[in-house]
Image 1 (cartoon, rainbow, N blue to C red):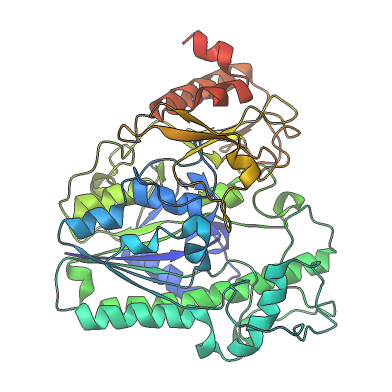
Image 2 (cartoon, rainbow, N blue to C red):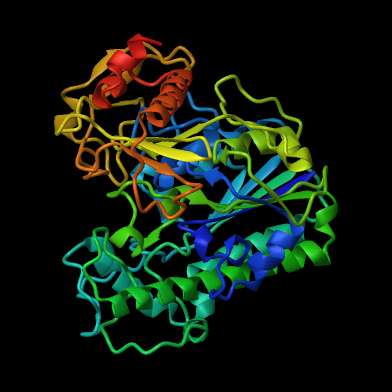
Length: 496
């Protein structure tokens, strides 16, 4: 048995033909849907990039207990479990966050790995002099990642020099070299179509439009202030990069055909989250409510055991289910702390999964959906406290916790999933991610009657029902006690 996962970053389901898009050029995603099962109710778990990947490794939510950070000493890691049980695991990636302080324990869980440089602000090319940035480029202040991106771009003028082709090329090379072997898992993971939306002209030519404005392919993380023409241009820039992703996905599908891998190889195509391209008058992610453009993600799975293709599933699934699915596929037992559900029976016969799921950011609203309604529970305190991080690996995205932060930690008793390890309790950064977590208030949407989530619903009975789901799932996941206080749920918890 073999398994291949193709993982994109910031892949929007509403831009894909299998999910209803009629203007993007993505024929290989359409072809993929014909060969796999397409999931309509797949949701994020923990946000953003590395919290989602911790969910992928551990099969449980990360966001209730800590923000962006590495695999912890007590964490179960799906690729490491496979490796220890005789399944060779390999990661081909251009996702540079794996190699920052807050992600540096993930790639070493695989048997082998390769990394391809140059995405976004990857500190790759060393250049002391200021980069040559065209006057037409929309400025983004002095952020070092923006400067580094313009240092890197001249070294990727041709498509074959960009990270995504290298990543897929390395993954395809792994498949060809090992097609005759058994018991391996390959994860091909590209940062695209994450911003900046840097693609070659022939992909842009798929989306002809009049535009005489500034160079604009990297949206800011804020409310939309741009003109409608600039917003539409940005969507076309994203679509061009999406079409590039579609092209390289097609190479994997071609290889599946050529080598007859459909006979015994699982294929999973997924993403960590979506991205706002002006919808709800917002760009990007992190600072706004987790509308479905971010939270409801595409997922395609081919399981050679059941051989279901061209079908759809409406069951609620998440990233935490993928490690359980892979362990089950290889006949490896799941660790007790893993909360995800193997999807083999869902793929084979649409077996039910669960009545509701959680998703969110550490320090943001805690969100719950049952598939019909989405309820976003915001902080009730203006300063979004109390909030703490629980960890044995005190690192943020690109740096360790500061000396000041480390002067205020205390040791606390183990959680149910820390294997008896006491952990550090460190004051959190309540405004680091979701800056509107208090201002937005609690939001309830009826996805059946209001699929675009334009008008919040006021229905006390439905809200009470969703709060019950929320409390149960938080308790099931051993949420810290202060989360109930931050969200104004102490009284509701006491009456359960």
